Length: 273
Image (tube, rainbow, N blue to C red; front, top):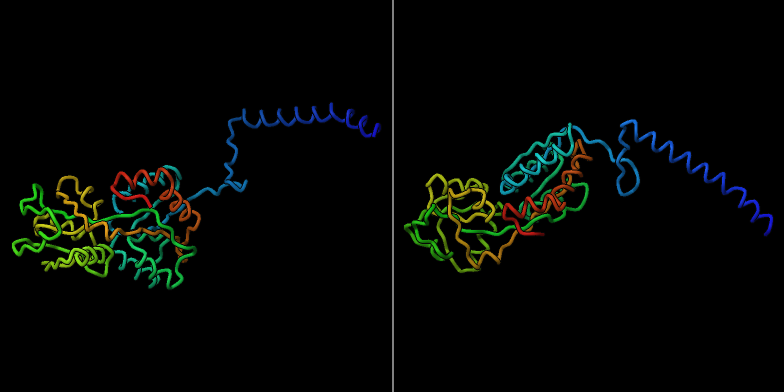
């Protein structure tokens, strides 16, 4: 025991010299202006992202995802986010038919299931936001729409989303819940098209998402109704098997789900997942 203790005491000064040398080397490496590689939670260096990440996203995500796309490009110089916005069912059909994309963000689990059913995602989808319907009317609400039942007035031109797309399925659900029968003048293929009919004064009212009413910025007036709580849509997101830029796809999804991403979505009127 005595010999081991002596040997340990002799080594202590040497260890101190070694630590001092390491500190000196570290100080020199930082004083030359170089930046050490960032490490992820596993301790390995994070890959530098580059190239294009293609995102297929529900039409109702246009404003918030465009904002997040710009943030992503600023955070990762050398990258570009390309969006394809449209009806979730149309986007899902394109993906399963082989359209190249890196990320799919749908407006309902049902439309995401079209893609997962064909095993076209590389991991399970996760919900990143929720949304609910509002009645969009002309500014000033000249038709005096205050409830879902008011949409049955034959004098009103009402537009609905087609039942095959999430906003149309949600509309059908709330109308059934309220036992209201509406005869629309047209069915539209996505929520932006339905909203546009009111903005252009081609319709008096439409059932759209509350986020779309907010994004219209005064071009329409929103009317809330209690039955909307019966059809709140979950929005799932997932990386795709066809991705040519998997690292960038994962990073974009991480941004959407991050506190920064959630703030953008909340400001747009989305509910938290």
